[in-house]
Image 1 (spheres, rainbow, N blue to C red):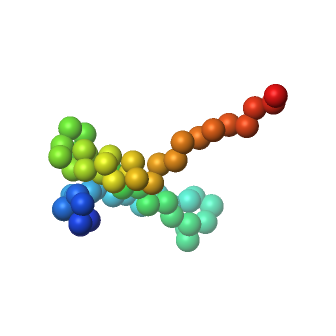
Image 2: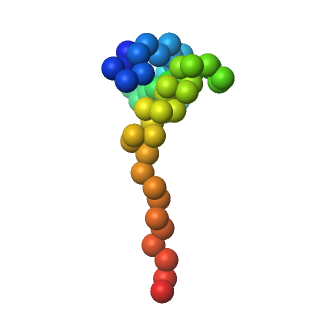
Image 3: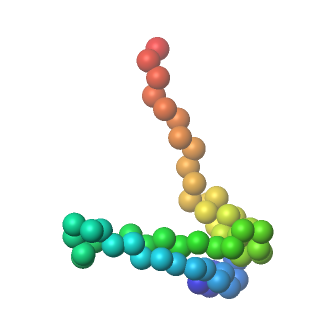
Length: 58
């Protein structure tokens, strides 16, 4: 993957298939811990992360 802010990010991936429906797949992208790619990916994901504020009874 290449990103303007993070440059090249070598990512590993796996596709997991659903046993009951072979047309359903889940793609999982990972990066090696402790690498510059890990830091860059963490930086990129922080842009999309939102803070969860649960609704509580008052």
